[in-house]
Length: 321
Ligand code: XMP
Image (tube, rainbow, N blue to C red; front, side):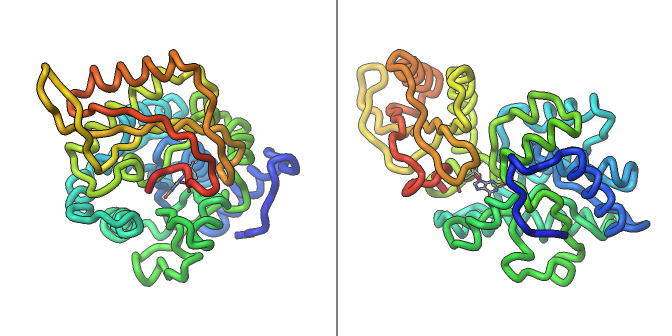
């Protein structure tokens, strides 16, 4: 598939869709394909392109890695059901937590997630179903940041010299790799996806694991999941490109019930950005910040400190890991 960038302003969505649907059909031929749907804009657009091109020969799976936001797997399945697409939820929580156990280095965590996702879970699904292709929503920014050595995006394989057919037993198809987020939004809209998807905040493939500094455990995921729900709720009208709650590893002294509590810290990040290559912190009202701090410390007893990030990307990156 073509790799040259198509800028959002140059994009003709209907023509792009027609071309990619045709390309997917011709690559897959009579074989079967699987798509890795996470419910984000990119994988949702890739799923609809595949669905248009392949119909029932496309198996749509949502991998429940245990790292998603509250209620996410069920919500994604129900949105796609309304679009006539059946989504299978695959419970792989144990495998992911096992792979992440004891790992603290950010890039090693990303690598563990990649291997569990592509080698173990998809390797198995592909073998079971006889599919020969994996369709996925990789976009240009994912490729660039990985190639620049900034952050290994979980979905970059071929570009790093990985022969997926040899290593995992299937070929990867990436119909969106010429686009950035703003281009994908146009495609998603033209594909008839609902506003809740084409306007959806980006959410990374490695999910809440990118928001835990240090080892990822089910207990820490639960804390960051609760904080994420609060942040997304409280800031839903802030018009941010992306919102996140990050759980720090260092503890600080706080107090609970008049006694010392050496507790956890949550960092809130809200970003203004167009395509995620650069970003600045969203200006929030002091009362909003105070309400966030109160809700997080009241509703999550383990947390005694809440901070708001004021650094821009670069030199920051958007996710902490
Ligand atoms: P960073 O942290 O690199 O994030 O500044 C830029 C954008 O990319 C998202 N992101 C990812 N998306 N797989 C993805 O699908 C990943 O491994 C990944 N890492 C970061 C991030 O949420 C932000 O929108």
